[in-house]
Amino acid sequence: MKWEEIRQRYAGQWVLIEYQQLDERLNVVEGEVVAHSPEKEEVYKHLLQTQGKNIAVEYAGDFPQDLAAMFDALADILWNE
Image (cartoon, rainbow, N blue to C red; front, top):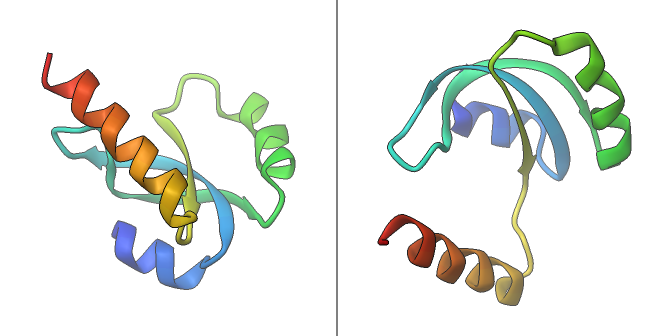
């Protein structure tokens, strides 16, 4: 499933994804949802069952604007060094 489909289907939830493809910034492009919940801790409980798999934990929703700006700035610093 493409990331945009995951975002739409699981909007406002944390998702545990076994990914098949990442982009150059290590964002999930495509994968299979292994677990999902509005509570991040519930998704983390499923991590033990995913050893040896390519796994990402993502939030399928919009972050508050000030938090998103902080992450964008940090990503620019990390990726442009």
